[in-house]
Image 1 (cartoon, helix red, strand yellow):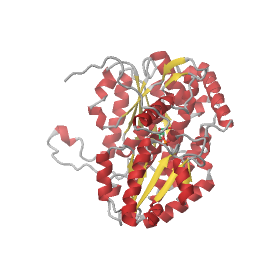
Image 2: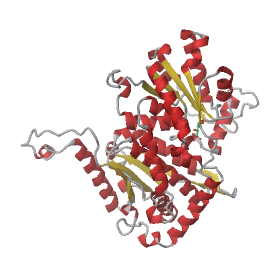
Image 3: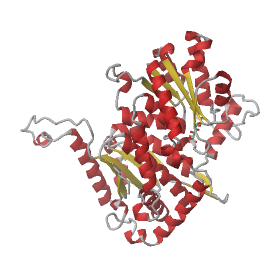
Image 4: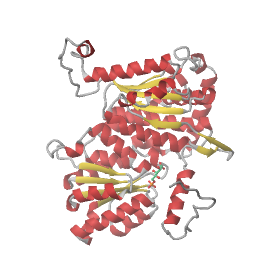
Length: 464
Ligand code: PA5
């Protein structure tokens, strides 16, 4: 087994640790057989070239190109703006927050080691986008436009706005040097523009969908341009990919996760999955997971086309903050949830808690500990409180938060997603619901070939 940082602690998904948990003997019994079939289904689609995300850690030519462009652009520009939504934005945000840390954009050039500031705009809200553009010097800004399809209205509209702003300042000729497109290698409007104007591009491989693209140039370029060690990121992902090939369920972390969550959903009605990292730097990774899990598993039809209306509901959360928000519901509300914690043995940059007010018992016990110890104690106490209430939970444990560990976590969760897809009997790679929303938007905005949908039919009712 390759070296690994990440450990999945899952005792609290099992009986007798948690009331109503899965019988551990089943991991060697029926669930092992269920997993074997699911893994075979995944391997078959992978063999047919449909699951390109597995291969991303080993795409050395693409990685070399990412580094080359990242180094070049990183020296030229003070600000990098990623324009991308859904799977084309969330990975870059998760990587930025996890590996560049808080307040990156507020740090001085020296504090950033002269790497650029990184902004990821994943919503066409003119208020936010306008305020950002006002703050940037277009002459010193690179726009990385990320869209696999090259047609998503939100991203394309933002590209058009940005292009005009840049042209106004640097002129039409020089403007193209301020753009880098990450898109499908052969199709779409971005590809067409790039080919016509010589704008540099990076590929989103044909067999890699948006939410599985964090380890492709979609996530790698923004990370590399700011100095993230993408070799370590990919090495972690590559090692996890190997671990997740293990045919034996108990040795396969993605298998254990997918099989137990699926069994708890189907057999015990635990169909809400709360992802709760205990590190601020991982808050946006919870949003990344939420999109991955929701868009991949929430489906109206199974693979045979039969209506199923299935899929667990992921909820992005944050510890310890949400102990004072969601936790009451998690511990005493309906028995329909599983909580997935992420913990760090070393939270990093720890701070000692001073011994002050030692005469006050409600404060004196804190002095001499550290904030990191407190954060970890909160996580362990929460897991135990949930367990005592018969609430299943599991923990992804990392020694510390680094590029290698993030690669492992991303790969584990992606593999678990496609295994879960096979268990639920749905296609985790499509998103017909999202596509319908996109098409209706095109109609409302007057795109050629898309008639404006009637969306006010029926009996409108208002309360004023
Ligand atoms: O995961 C997905 O497939 C989606 O969330 C897409 O990433 C999102 O809709 C953006 O699509 P595109 O990259 O084509 O602009």
